Image (cartoon, rainbow, N blue to C red):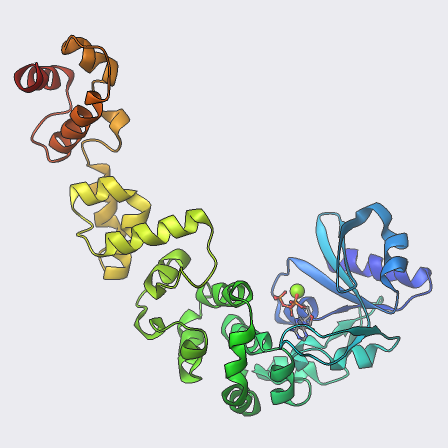
Length: 363
Ligand code: ATP
Ligand code: MG
């Protein structure tokens, strides 16, 4: 990845521009963590970047950032900028393109995110970001309260980085979070969810949640159940325990899963009917939250006599033939009855047994 990125820098310099790898990639490179994408900063304007990389550019252009895909790697190429006043605690009201790298680095969030690599592969460290990485500590670039007031999402980014990287927050950051945390209310639930998802899926999730609670962010994030979440093995399971799907955005699919997990949580997850109704995935999550082993749930699930209506040994047509009736809505009732009897082991899932039962009770 680095080699390909250096080629991009080279190409931009050949075209007369300065360009550097910046931010997350450099930080993670020093930490020996693999990155998925690479941020590049440059004095080239977006139109120049487009003319250099042509078809490799994606059509969207967000705040003058251009995405270039080369050899399956995603490069986010952003023109050096100064951000003008922030009035909505998230995006600057306007940006001004500039020619100076150091000035661009000042608008960034944390010292560890200001490191750059130039086209020769040399690390440039204007603000001692490397020291923070070595000491596993996070400091803002300049005054923390000001940084968080400009963009309150940085509060969550700080906690997410501390969690994922297992770093500590500087005292100044912690104090500033107390002063500015009410601004989190101004941030969209989508952005908050993205950061929270990364905290909840980190191996250090316990530490992240501890930080959120210690800083009182459960209140600001409207997560009153945060201190009661007992199990973090499954992300959707965490959201089910948080019970905020009327507030935070979820896909239809996720919402359904959350609802089913919540229902399954109130049931006995080794019960045949419950296993059958909600399926293995939902029951495993619910059981796990309650401390029942996945092995037990899986064993009981695999031993169910049927796993769906399609597993019943006779289908609707065969049933109507036995009852000598045209198929019709009455079949639904009969299938429901058979399902119940077979699941509870009152009736064996066997053609002859079911036939005898039908003749006895329905003919
Ligand atoms: P990751 O990609 O793992 O989330 P990252 O540090 O690369 O980490 P990005 O969101 O990709 O984060 O942003 C790239 C760089 O842009 C950051 O390293 C930082 O320098 C700067 N940056 C991103 N978001 C902000 C922000 N909200 N405020 C200030 N600077 C930011
Ligand atoms: Mg990044």
